[in-house]
Length: 392
Image (cartoon, rainbow, N blue to C red; front, side, top):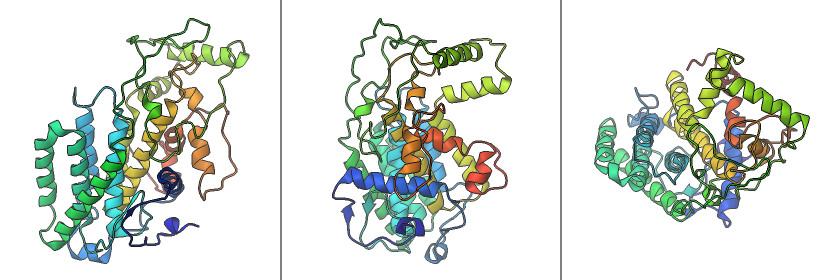
């Protein structure tokens, strides 16, 4: 088992990890994914030094959760999010910064990207999380600076004044600045690539209900991934032939279940369709917030949980855009079926996790985060996290 999985402390060299940055990120994230399948509570709580300075492992609203709520509020504000920048990037950058800042103090896990020299273990993890989140969001959403500054002061007011708090703030800001620097030229500022709709049978066409003149995020596969070495690192098998029985059966099923006012779909199936058709990253962040509060996760545990969730979401979107738009597919979800297997192969085959499983080309649908999170949905969360109940 790797030192990351065992919780060994990192070395004390100040550096941006890796001779080959993306290779390092890929390895680290594979380990993160592997660790996600282990219980995330009770294994690395607040250190004695943290408890001594009055940090809240499980205060009324943990700072990681609070700043996740703040970002959710921003991306849901009309006009706040650039229409050409996918919001999963913001969540990934913020939580990468929070995780590396908190872990620089906690030292129970390997860093995602940034390693600091001499970060004192007595520094406030809460202050580091707050400062990192604020620093990132002000950079990404400068129009919200006054609001974010007020939120920063409110969050810091919950932490006892003193050198530990100041050290935490300094660590959070330093890590955030470095993460932002790494992502400053990641291709996210490029303009979407014009898409020419084909006229051949099976060519992608604009989809209901709005029939936009252009698909969204046609440039997003060119954005530097957070963990994958490239957007096409794990390629799916092609969809079934348009003339095949497999395609026809799937098409007829989707038409029957997905048509407006369907009488075939059960209420649960209709609800599931609406759920997965929405801004799914927002929903799963809210579900994770509920899980965190229900089980009183510490700041270090929350930092890891939300980094896992949002780094996987960000790369999920980047990787899937490698295949979208494309042929019209029976899933009816504008290409989701073609993305099946890529994330599952990454999750189950990369790094130290050796599970004899290969879903590439199978009939199961699921990108990286879908495959990961569908294992944890509803009742499955109990076994994934070893919790007895998980209401949301």
